[in-house]
Image (cartoon, rainbow, N blue to C red; front, side):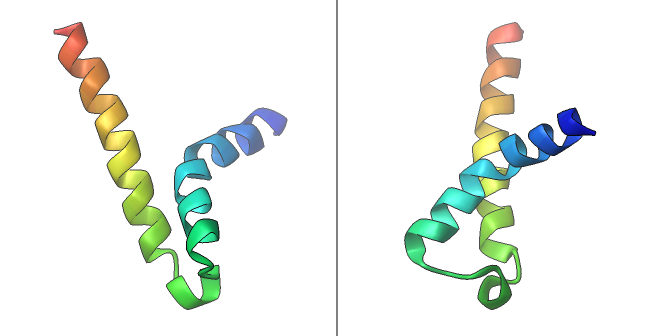
Length: 54
């Protein structure tokens, strides 16, 4: 269970940092901004890995 918690924290980290820097609470945002930032960051990371793997 500890591994899953660590994985969740690592996966959501980019979005959490942006939301904290902007001073937006999760209740105000509804998770939309955090999800968008996470999708962009992890999309770039995954795309870069795939690009270099091919």
